[in-house]
Image (tube, rainbow over all chains, first blue to last red; front, top):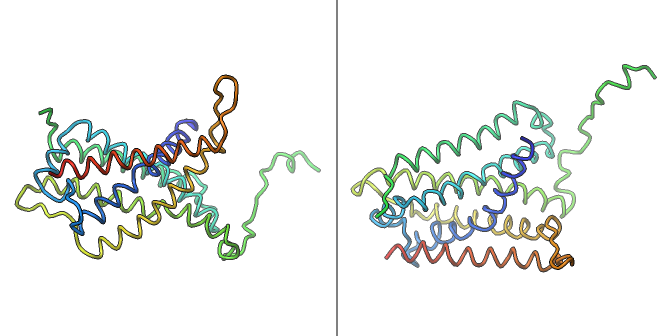
Length: 119
Length: 133
């Protein structure tokens, strides 16, 4: 089980490092400023992309994995800032349970918002 | 010393001053590195909301585009770049490979990680823009 959490921490860190900056740059800055056309700026293109099962899987990995990394980092940041209670089991349940919660919500959103389209 | 004293778990008390992280540049950068998790998490939650809003239908769908959101994204991008730089730089310390019984130099491993980051950014950025046409 320990190995599983370390795997999720490491993979979440890699995914956050490799994939998040370009999403923030394109979807958070360039698109809203109108510098480039971006897929989520228009309903048709966004829905078309969200219906693709590979995109759904990609978004699940992009959103869910980093939260396991974030949970670990933020928990130990609290410990380092003088909150030893963050080492305890309730804090572990809160942080890692939160990451599991985000994962489940992401799966639910991806499966219920736009139906899978293979066309 | 009694057996009880041997088996009892030692209790460590917090002895660091509250502002330890502000006393040295390295400590401060360490805390910033760990803190990057929070803005990145908030931005991913926004992305999840953006996905959910696609379910509102064509008439009601309105993507975020306000200036406060752009400013928020700029701040998040700075934290994201710092996370990427610090995390991928660690690869040379963490990963160890051998090719033909010779260890791969750590600089090469770090370079490959940054190459992976650049390639993934180009592919994802291209897809986000190309499929908007």
